[in-house]
Figure 1 (cartoon, rainbow, N blue to C red):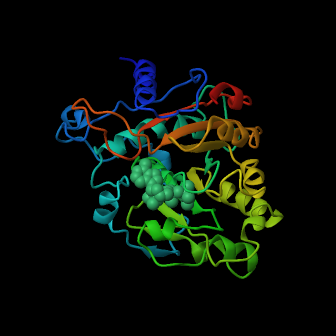
Figure 2: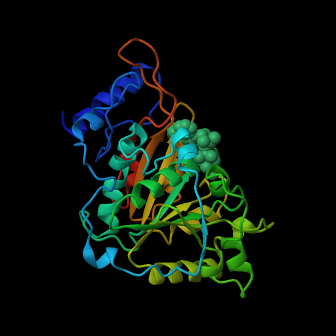
Length: 329
Ligand SMILES: Nc1ncnc2c1ncn2[C@@H]1O[C@H](COP(=O)(O)OP(=O)(O)O)[C@@H](O)[C@H]1O
Ligand SMILES: [Mg+2]
């Protein structure tokens, strides 16, 4: 079955078990990892030869050889076993179900970031992960996307916690609070290198949200933030930058932030977010050149008649230009 056929089958499957996927017509471009019941062996594991490397792609000499500009930044240790247990992609389990799912999701994103998509995407390396309302899975998806991309040989990733009103990246990763984005925006003496956190995943660097501030969300729409984005984009042209961002329907700043982004991933919580909410959220980010939708927390029926796992179920890309709102929602 082709990916599109798999996706169509998946949509039918989700509808059958009562999941409102919020689509009135098939999306233009569909990416759907085939459902893999947990009780069965992972088919990808069977496919993969024993010597299959952890990384996903052959290195590109020019990029892989680039010196790390953040060598002076502090280094933190991620507990990969703990993250594995939380269903977060790590190099310990490159063939896990979640790793396979994010492999499907990151492909079009990376193609756009590298300028290998259907047409060039300006600022394609700036990727905003957002949702309509809080709690839909932005942080879970941001971390997994960043981890998954960091496992590629020729990509370095900066994961920015830009959901400054409800930061959770450090907490989810098991790390204590640290200085970050807010501190750089508010204090001229704090530089980016001062607050970046390198990790034991060599290609993954973190930019925490930083100290709480009453006008935190407003600062995202500030000139200082725009300047910082320009600095990040220029300083790390080969780096993929994933922003865990505030939800679109709750603040006016999130749509402003989206204006600087090349790609946007809208996380949609299955069975909770309505089609109207998705349409309204997409209407707020009409200027972003590439928009993708990820249906999160979908349940589906297993072949043994029981409902499958609760978690990441299905992803598709509504990666069409300008009018993704109408086409995808
Ligand atoms: N696909 C998933 N599988 C399992 N747990 C998930 C999934 N997506 C989100 N969660 C959990 O749901 C909660 C809300 O997700 P989170 O990413 O923090 O939402 P948001 O950042 O949008 O507010 C968290 O406890 C998170 O770990
Ligand atoms: Mg969050």
